[in-house]
Length: 502
Image (cartoon, rainbow, N blue to C red; front, side):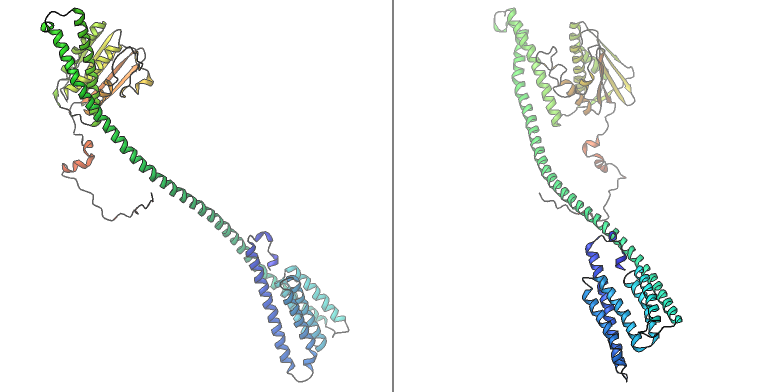
């Protein structure tokens, strides 16, 4: 039956070798069973009285000889071994008929097609059926054996054909099952190979993940160290800026104080000072005031970054704050021939804010607008919008390009950063102003178009809400909410503890 399986169906040489060894072992058992049965039969017949034992000795000898040759050739010539075994059985039956003269023994020929189909294939079974018919015909007309009747020949031939058909039906079913088994084996082998490849890829991915995890741990350690260094550097910078600002302010105050005293009372030092000396002292006082303002800006920025700015909030009329800031810069606008207009809504409510900081914001916006505007002027407007107050400062200056607007609130950023820039300033005013507004819970933004002027706007809440997010989010409100219920864990965590080696 194995010979009828296509070679392409066998995907594993080891499997094919094992199947071949199984068939050879089965055939070897059949041959041994035949030898044992023939030996027992002959010994039983030899015990009978008369010379029948000697007459049947050629029959037993033929069977044993054929079986011995088949056993010798089963490994090297499997097909030849099966052919010799079948021919030996047929010759033994023929010799038995000739020796004993009993034609009924011819019924044993019917097993030949069955054995041929089972041990080899159905074409061999058909060939065995044809040879059987020829052998029966020879025995019916030959003189060396008893003549067989036509009825016996037909019965033996039909019995052989029926046995061959039964053998074909049985082996065909077994062959179909074998084909299914081989197909399933092939599919399972392919799936197993695919699973092996996936397992190999999974192993590689696992190794890559472990490597990436180790790299991530190393990078996390480095990031933690760099963050610590950055925080230390930031803290050192803030302390340095604060200390330097304080150290600069003391001599600046002395310079400004003596300059103002000399200009206001020039006769303190005896004779009246020349006008040229007074002009120089005035220049010293003016530049010292400018330098003092820069120091104040740097100090304010460092305090904001360090989170050490405390707002002193009270209810103030925003219109008074705007008018006060406008009066401080009106001389600048008049010197350049610009107008400065203020407009406040009549229903403008009082705002809960730090008046000094808000005045500083408005003053920064008006100073910038006055410095960058050459024609026209500036219009300041304040109005109420829902639960907040909005203030806008609109100028008729050159405008700001779109690519510069996003960076305008960065510290030390100026539209003209060259050493010979036309307009002065340190580039800290807008950044400080924006942070002051955000400390109040408001927002600052701008709208500008090149050649059409710029509008800086900011909004402030009328009532200062409790900023509980700055103090721990919703967690802090558990002390004030009578309906707060803490979430207690009902089971232990099932997450495994990480065991990542550094």
